[in-house]
Length: 205
Ligand SMILES: O=C(O)CCC(=O)C(=O)O
Ligand SMILES: [Fe+2]
Picture 1 (spheres, helix red, strand yellow):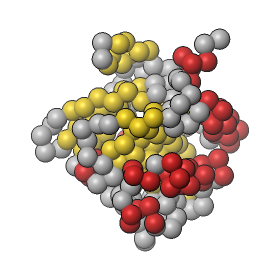
Picture 2 (cartoon, rainbow, N blue to C red):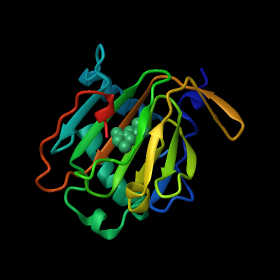
Picture 3 (cartoon, rainbow, N blue to C red):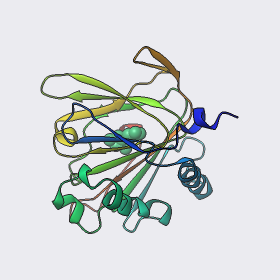
Picture 4 (cartoon, rainbow, N blue to C red):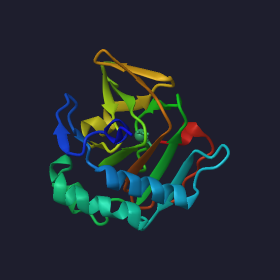
């Protein structure tokens, strides 16, 4: 079994991009952490039939809550001091299940959420396309299982992010087949913004 192909290499490393406020930490979660988080999600039985999204509000379950401390200990440079020092750092999680080939429309996360967003990728790679709203400039980012992406400032407000619906991604001359992917997005609700609705994949943001 080629575990490296499934989970990537086992050493964390920050990758530079040209998008202000965006940090991509490659292999932020090692193999064991990816498996533990994936197992915890499977055990929760969030996903069945057509249900491809789950949300947690308030105190996050323990399999996610440790990520706040991970940001502070391992990657404090991803957020400014206002974000880093807020309490709690995150109080909302969205878990998205993408079956092979599925995507998410290009969007800016709802303004009911504060700045400072963290996205964890599990199980399958995919290419996320970042699009600067003012110029339509696009930048493709390969997200591998175990990678953690953070969005704040310009990248959160002035760029959209989305994942094309396609079975294969092509990036840097490489063709990569999609599989089933789970992502976990952590955010902080703005005060007062406690009500929400979600009825379709178009209200995932
Ligand atoms: O699945 C992803 O990587 C992105 C999810 C996302 O953009 C969101 O939940 O707002
Ligand atoms: Fe988003």
